[in-house]
Image 1 (cartoon, rainbow, N blue to C red):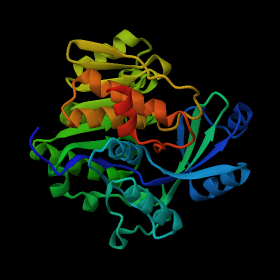
Image 2 (cartoon, rainbow, N blue to C red):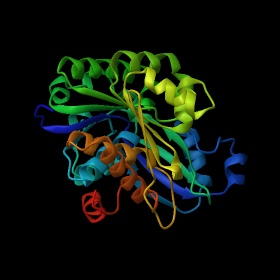
Image 3 (cartoon, helix red, strand yellow):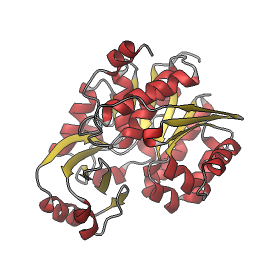
Image 4 (cartoon, rainbow, N blue to C red):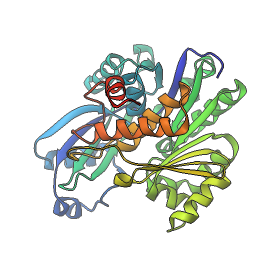
Length: 332
């Protein structure tokens, strides 16, 4: 790869997560679909928050989690997102900078008019997470937030599928993809959520065909993308995209699809699964760190598996251990 200031620049939602333990009855009683993300408004967010018991507050956001993971490996990532001029926005901006991520949009001049985004995450006893997100300030992300010079100075531009839920963000993503492509850089896409894939199926398919070099998604998301219920058909669909694709399979590890080659990589061992929030985000972090540092595809996937194992061992979607040290200890 030609030289670049940044390994990865991610474009995504700047969100503070509020994580609480609940049970399946709570999920059902509140009309949620377990294991998915739903968008809610400010009033719904307040009402749901008041129903929760003890909760942990930590910065989140899918793409932001990914770049925080890359920084923990020792990489040089950046993040583009919008926060409001409030306490939650200050918390997010502080924590992502402390994590070692350059935050483009975190200065006072770019504060949004709406309140900062919050995601209420309910974790059931099986460690599955169900999310309800008030996007707030994130909906103000638009083309003016995209710095073409910043993207040209990054090996990879990484995009959340979640961004397709807001019209201005779609325009921003299209501008970002053009800037990255014009500079000869790579574009990576996280499918984010099966409902996101359903809501924006045509747009995402076109984006993949026109601009995407790397795809990240779990099995359910990939199944929804190709409207199939079989692994073989999902893999065949990924091959037809002519991208490098990673499909995570939970405890079964991941498949890396590169042209006619499909490689299975096992999940890294974890003593106890506490919270699966951020597992896919951190798999992408490890893979992208390896990808931008010259690792082979198996090595990239092993780093992804290691990062995912760390994140599911505790509450929250930001690493508690230094991933660089864990990788060295594991000999990856």
